[in-house]
Length: 178
Image (cartoon, rainbow, N blue to C red; front, side, top):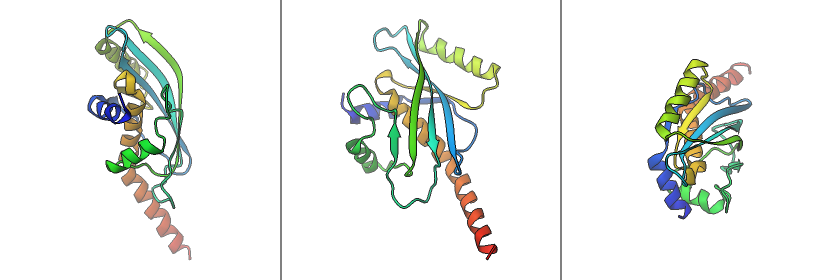
């Protein structure tokens, strides 16, 4: 399956069960913890559980060029977001601010329960611990990297209006200080 097919599959199948509550910090890095759940490709009665974090470095809206840097999003045979894949996304109207995204998977497990049962288990665990910083994402196992990019893009999009207000407030403050 080529990256276009995987991207389209991820777009159709990705679900954000629980998103990070806050906004991305434009003055420093934002650490986005996540739990990524996928039905196993080997046995659909098992669920692949990936836990990790994406470090988003200074997600500024206004920057001189549009060259995002993605690290830790590699699949087994190619970098998820190399030049050809970025071009593919740009042609579909998808772009990322020019900043650094670094993914670190710190746990990869297989749970011997169905995807639905594992979703319920993790939602209950996140609720019980009142964890508002960890996202819960569901997507296909063969293109989980794309699902993770979709999650980060959704958070960046949600943060954009807040970022613009902050930028305008800072800009106004600079002009008033003169």
